[in-house]
Length: 283
Image 1 (cartoon, helix red, strand yellow):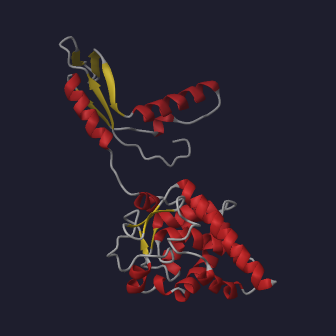
Image 2: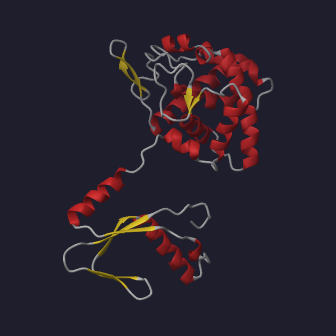
Image 3: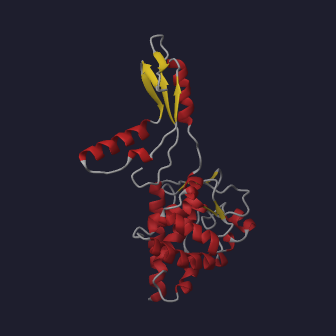
């Protein structure tokens, strides 16, 4: 709210219907209520407004609260009905993290991914609706949320829009080379077959790809080092990944553990493996 980026939306108040409440309009058209009023939807927004008011009164902020105009819905329900209404509100609008990130217009990583979707071979290959890539999805190879999360995890020193645009230019070239190098990233049949045993064509692997992009970014002729990816142990059956990144087995199928911890573990291990290959090449 203080940053001016909040769009006001409806707050719902309920005047409890218990037989003792009195509701009327006075001569000036104001609603006069004598009874118990509960917040059905808008608790956090009202608390935020109260904090801003307190900050204004203490001199810590000078925000004009009259700039925020909230539509208000007022109901007059008994406890049971009010609870049912609250249950409906609590369901919320459930959208995937990829869709949510796609709607984010200000995050630096989001800006980078949008650039990649326009100016690299990732165009048309990024899933922006779902959090995962379904088996029959022939076009998409990575989700918007995965790319955003990977960039934020790996490029932690990203601070300005200028840095984001510079990084986007490099990553555009990096992914162009990567997609051309790895058949699974431009061939659906090979990708579908590969996913049975390998991480190479998985959405999750992009945490590793972004980590590798950082390792070679400052190297002269960095493109020469990309083929080292083909020497990485990316088999799902590998002991390297079992338990922390991969669960299951060959008979029942492998499952990727996609959590904050597993992503960090994956990035750290990919970095160590790739650094070793780099050292061996330059030795």
